[in-house]
Image (tube, rainbow, N blue to C red; front, side, top):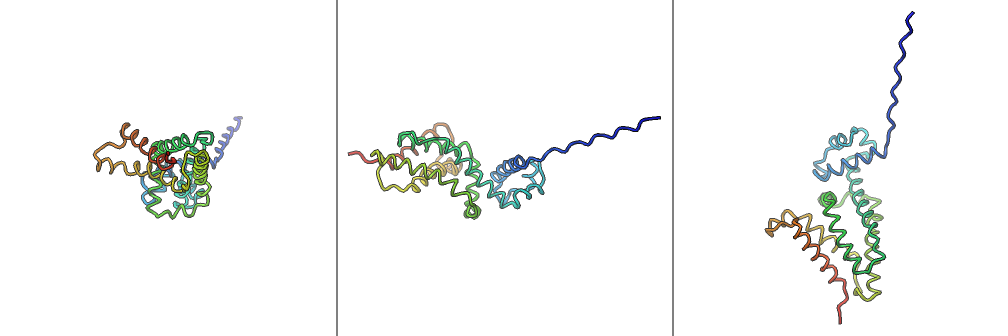
Length: 220
């Protein structure tokens, strides 16, 4: 008498890893929003690239708008973490400013997605970041760093008084952000390759001098 065939063993279902899935969705969404903006981005492409489906995407992020805001917050998180790693507190105030200018410049070059995403958010008049409950805690460490550097520089007699840290922050960002966000049109208008190694070196030197000349206490 033949023995009954053994039943095939049930294949164990792979365990879900929500955090990993969310990370893949965020990575795919960052690329999609960077390339196509909020209006041109497609949820199906994001889900496909993340190796999931639209249902799971909406399960974690509820809507395309929420996903866009999360991506915006995430790029600020990355910037804040990189800025904190500088550890400027032990540096001479002038050297700290030089390092900060260099950091912002190099960070924008290495992370073009930051500029593209913020440009897109400005097209929407900042309406998504207005809804963020995390933005203040993400940006405040940068401003706190600037405030501390200015205070140390003023106490040592190197920097002049009456400087608004917020204006310094705007200047640091503007000098580098504008150059890179408008590099294509400016290269045409000025008839020079603004992304050549020489041009980038010249601009970084210029930006550093502009900031320091504003901060330094006049001699004599």
